Length: 186
Image (cartoon, rainbow, N blue to C red; front, side):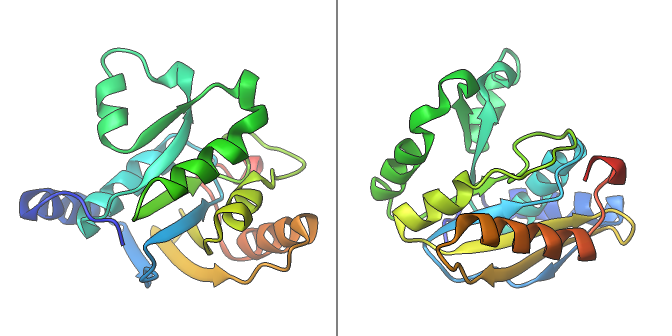
């Protein structure tokens, strides 16, 4: 898996998680390349909690984020934390761009929120599945459950090639087991 940070960063991450009352459940896959599908994404707090877990585990992730969020003083921080600024108005070649990015790196985990937003949506986007299929990498679910204060890792999802059916099955799995900070947005 991609690694980042040292002993101090892991210590800070572990202690901040402990102080916040959050814990991690599940096991990280031992894969050099991976798409992490993170849901339910209903709050900016999801990002903060995810970064604490990343720090605590000493892993390196990359994530897609709207380019508008990359402004001073946060741009440098987001880039250092693995942010990839995305122009959502010109996202036509996004799958190909991210697939190419996988090809250029030996170890890379990209976190993608299938909802594509923190707002309630009727349909999840399937781009994360197309990216995984094109890059020939597995998809692992990562889910926040606010009532239990647990971030769950897994399972690695078996894809069928039918993106609509896979998205529906993943959404059903997440909706039945996990509750976001704002359940009304799920």
